[in-house]
Length: 249
Image 1 (tube, rainbow, N blue to C red):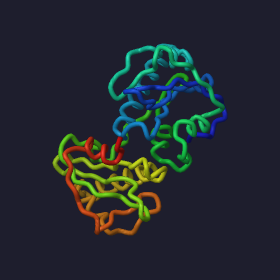
Image 2 (tube, rainbow, N blue to C red):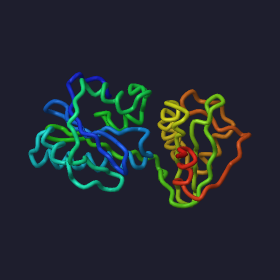
Image 3 (tube, rainbow, N blue to C red):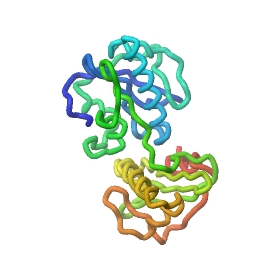
Image 4 (cartoon, rainbow, N blue to C red):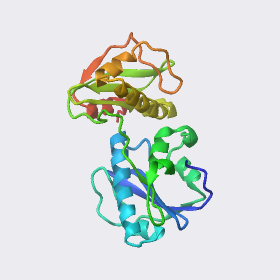
């Protein structure tokens, strides 16, 4: 888990569409890793970028590049959609350890309790070789986490605050949670809880919409929140449109 190794870290920031979406780091002589900025992109992009960078680091290890060599060789390589790139003029930063870098990238998060970060970074859920670049495996709940077409959705609440929106589409076998960043760290912590709940619902044979509707009126979870029966069930053209509601300009 992040924060358990005091070895200093060197890193470049990865940028995409004007945003810093993560860091490509080398830790000592044994480890490279992609570390996501949680609030910069949606879950699908975080997973795909982590997977892409992890594959690059694994190939570098196979070809004999050391950790620092590996992250430096990607500087100036053209950015790719959903993956990003390291600008040619990017500066190599340093910090004390992974815990410090995690706090810099994701202020307000508590890495030791954030299971999304665990999925993206925990070495027990990763694989590597040679000097062991850590490469993430895609989280599979049994539902797709991205829908291209129409979805239904409901607000997720903790107390009196809407922390995000739960959406579903039976037509695309998809279900997901869209955090509402203005609600603060609780919006992001809930994301991992809803992923776990989706996996459990799949195991019981529920459809995405059935899994969503099952939660209506259930007691509030301190991490995941609740779906109030008094809230309307709404339909929107796409998850992209829902993200614009959750994260207005």
